[in-house]
Image 1 (cartoon, rainbow, N blue to C red):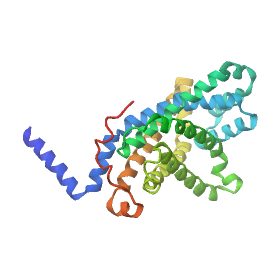
Image 2 (tube, rainbow, N blue to C red; image 1 turned 90 degrees about the vertical axis):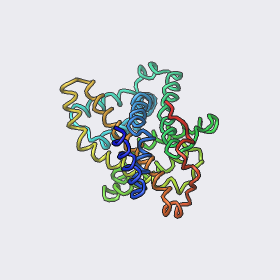
Image 3 (tube, rainbow, N blue to C red; image 1 turned 135 degrees about the vertical axis):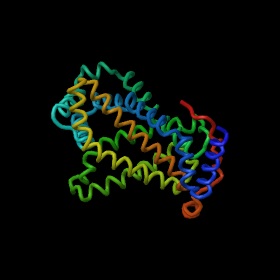
Image 4 (cartoon, rainbow, N blue to C red; image 1 turned 30 degrees about the vertical axis):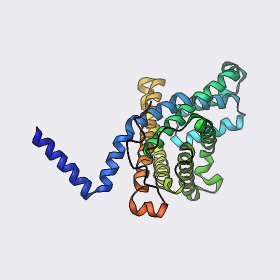
Length: 290
């Protein structure tokens, strides 16, 4: 047993010596706990951000509700019965009964609870960059700003795919660039400016690209999976399928942000981006928080 442990220790040490980047990347992914944090963020999106969308549809004009339907159809490739149910659900939100059911106070509570998603994402960014949690007065307003901006972007995703009518040839690169810029800004905002812009660029490129690629993949995978799940399990099947896809998406974003820090602190890249290496101690950030 001891000999096996020694061999494993020697193998790990050899890996660190021969492939330092691979070793650092593996350690970073383990300490950030990409699956745990990805699942946590996905759950917060499902129970926080999606209800916030229903609040928007309850109080928004018909043109915004139609735009949201267009975005959902473009992002997930929905069709048939599933698309009809989504259209019925979102477009029915503008009646007075739905608004009365939410109420002004209820709408505010739902929007505030949706900031749990931005808080979970903030912890991922802090843990990836080995930073302690920021003071509440520094970041509290940032949670709501992040949520509002992302909800606005979500409404624009549909027309963005075809470059607002210019065609998909321009829409594809525009979508990728917009996604990268959005994740670049997200990291800077949620870290409270404690990490400069340039070192955050590798994580933004990987996160933005991962989101776009998985969105394209969702158009191929989700429609058939949703139809199968709804036929087999009823409405609950759609919940399972959507939540599974969200977990994959959020885990990919978590991994991209974590690996972005590893890339940005590589000696050559660090010199180009001006990355400070003083936060290389993984114990500075303390234990992960729920």
